[in-house]
Image (tube, rainbow, N blue to C red; front, side):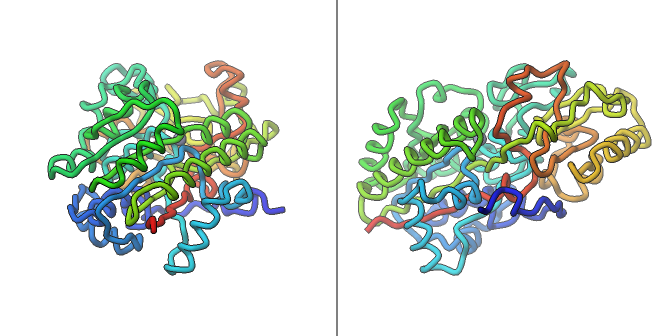
Length: 403
Ligand SMILES: [Zn+2]
């Protein structure tokens, strides 16, 4: 049986933050496909994105983000997704492109949805992970609910592609949970739509199909797969059941939308299942806390903040101490090395202080936690993501035009 170990953990300097075959290019490509190209700070040529992603030109499109549905997670359990399986088969027959692209680093929802919504990169959106330093308060903030964070529109200043389309009088409808309508993450990453509160997922796809007869774009988001993955792991029955449900909702959209509608399915990140035997606890090893003032990010993607006044040499020593403990279980970069490797894409001056002085990217089934600061629930979560590996960064880009 193929498992997640089959996929490489090799870290390579990242060009994909600004690649046209990445999550940041999806909405710019769609804007071009709809005849109203919206260049972004990273993608100046939406038509080139459309070509690179082999996206047909249409009047109406539905874009679906399935939270946590990595391309390899999907492929390894494709038996639970008959609709997606046949869409992938058709697509690979028609185009020479694989039905996948890459998400950003870190491979996590707050960062990736912002990359998707703005068509840019974490270095420009300032949405750098699950948690990150708020330089104004000098505290760690959580970026899903924006606990302790800079308010969403002050932090995330890139215009969204949805806003740009709306300014060009294109219909942009978002159909989602009422709890997300006014959420700070929506305001940061996905603002500028006509938001329809629909809590029942069956009703959501019904409305999306109905609206597809009108020109424009509809955005749908499903979180069940991510939730099941965090709760039970992507190798679980619970995850498979969530995938089956999402697959059948997608089947409904493809069957009931107006002829000529482009359906695009993607995700914010994939997932790996953890091995508790491979967990590293920073609280139980002095070498991992020495010189470290605060830790942000998440267990697969840490940002270590050094004490105020730390010199470049101090930071190098923190990185060296981590390397000497983790060996091949994680990749460790100083902030400068991360910037040189383009890890967060081009970085705004104002965003630089929010990035950790040392970046730690877990490999394999490894997680790096702090038993003093994190609950057991958080440390023992069976399915996680955030790091740079294929499993986490490879996401689907599945497209179909309704006949
Ligand atoms: Zn997610």
